[in-house]
Length: 577
Image 1 (tube, helix red, strand yellow):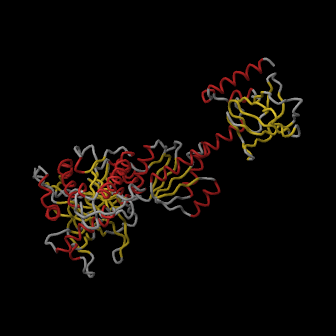
Image 2 (cartoon, rainbow, N blue to C red; image 1 turned 135 degrees about the horizontal axis):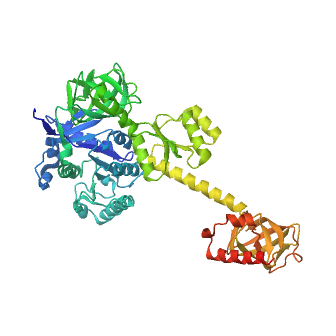
Image 3 (tube, rainbow, N blue to C red; image 1 turned 135 degrees about the vertical axis):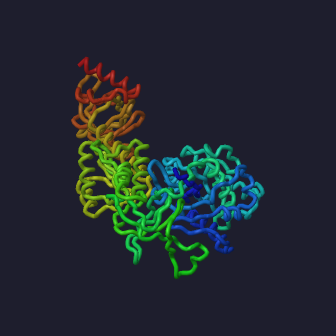
């Protein structure tokens, strides 16, 4: 058998974080150091990625790398520089993420923001190791560049640690143990926080050193790839390019792809086509020349980003696979997409997303939050989605809803949803979608509880207060104290002798009408069909009259000891009537 040639590819590193926290600035600083120095053989620009060779990392880190005990075998680092969790979720392959490591960039002055929280949720689901870059330390008042933290002025040092430990606490809320990178003892169990300034490069050498160390220590075989095996990749974006038609920007994570290779591309239906051209941007130190945007290459090896030009790519989907090979791979591609989409007959919510990666992340997080899914598909929210949600709502209205993540709602579907009373939750942050949905369910359940409470009479004990008769009849208005339980407007009243007398027409507390009054409260009640001094007197004790039907609906497990005691009194009175 011929010898299988292998090589160690670059670790693929995704740069993630909240808007304006400095993701692009971080990569710009790394790229800028090389562009400025015109270093020969420097950083190479890929589609959606930046390849930083080890020689450049060594130049940036200097003697810091001496602290790594093992011999460094990796060729460099491949940074995904289309930042955002949407791009990260599209970096997917069957069973996990294409990204080997991630940098979560957080503005230390703002702490974790919505997209940052979203990012760590997704990193957790994909089990992707990550480092936190606590950016913008240069904006801490009094900060002196390249001066150690403990050598900063006391007030500056105190301000840094206040913000740093807030970030540690926020990460702890999501079950991550985090420490300053110098204090991390076990990188497999603890998250390293590296204070940086992406603006002036402070802390970036330490950040790169930790990434190299993590790659060396924990990735190992994961980075070993066959040089000549057919390429496997994932689509970051589907784009229309002038003169080229529809193209796909792909991250190749395994093997090699060559011009004229047959490929199968993931879509609603797999696309079998042939590579017409492989395009890569010019090297960074040449990109200032606007005449050339891309260079046409014959082959691309993992790990790399490339723009693929091929016929019939209009139906390609971001987040779906690209494999070198022919029609024999169609079923594999189909299964991979079907693994993500959900079609069932069980009661559950309808979910829509814009890409396969986004849908996969949404499915994982909803499942972890025990929210059942009836259907999960890619695309715009249509009338069919609304009709399906409506049918679910006929059986369970809390599940008869649509969750749309980065997915457009068609106008007809929005109108139909409004007419049918189908709730649509829209957002581009998954955890916000879940929060909004759970808050809505909670409010709806509380409204149901209150409506039910108005109809079902519950045990209570009421005392008519002396010298608090404001009107004797038509209706009688008297001040009362609720001695136990909860009293609802509309209930009939029963005396201690079992005689039913009048009905509470209205209750007021501090001149405001209320629907219920609880134990310990004093309210004024208007009682129909009663005259004070005849059927009822000051100082009397009365109870809500509980019919046999109401008695059957009372859940005794939900009653307090005080309410159970009153219920026993009411039952004894009714038996003695």
